[in-house]
Image 1 (cartoon, rainbow over the protein chains, first blue to last red):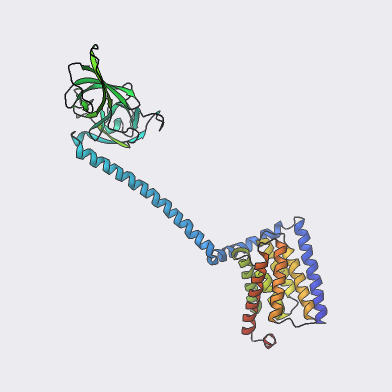
Image 2 (tube, rainbow over the protein chains, first blue to last red):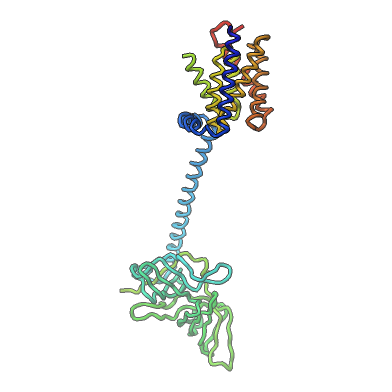
Length: 264
Length: 139
């Protein structure tokens, strides 16, 4: 009797199972799937999250990755702060310019500059008229001339670099005090022109600004380093002699500069 | 109480199989329950648990149920002539059953998984038999 009951159960259950399978293959399983998954998936997820070691490790790895990203961000910020600190330290340790007139500014852009192709001829700084910057303010880095503020917005300013084609100011050599005019040639080159033939230009001699400040204090103060003489062009038949000058700064590597504000 | 515990065991077997390790835990559980109890209600349990397993595994609902019912039918057919409550039979039935089931669902490393299933089945059967107060199971 029991054996018959088992056979009956087997046949009936097999018919039901096959019916479910056929219905499922014909697409009648959506409702059943929804009900089963709604009921059992939360429990399955609960078990999965608590028992599965790989999942735990994945969660931990994910957390570690997140922490790593945050730490990297913090490290980048700290490095930037450290670089700023070094720049400040270098600037205020070496400068002969009164510190209260110096305004640190971060270079936020270098228009038309393509690394490896050309040199920057202008910077965009993150300081503008609201910070007390004026057109004509000189920009330096460690007592070395960088350029002049030529355009101004409320929060930003444009600095034309000393080697730009439009750059021109008076300068002199530090050893022989030969006076001349620096003309930017672009791509990091400058020419000290209009030097009298009677003056003596020495290779390697430093060129400093002769001082071109206005009554309001705009322009280059005297004694700011421009560069050093790399070659001299002395022609006895010419009116003047000239020298090729190279800046001591690598303009494509700067991150921060200092604006010399006009004293009020 | 006994059925509630059994249900929980089957549910955990399903959850383990779906989410934790790709071993046919439900098949092992059903085979062991069938061998120990020799009751006909295992057919209905196998249909229900097979449907839940297929749904949670995103397979066609019913294929596991059909396989389980056929496997249980074979086990009952075998027990008409031979003693099935032995370690050897548990090992053979779980190993071959797992092999065919894994073949059906398209699993990988079928042979290894089948052998592990067989060993696991024997281990679970051994524990259950040792701890069950029912004398008929102990013999």
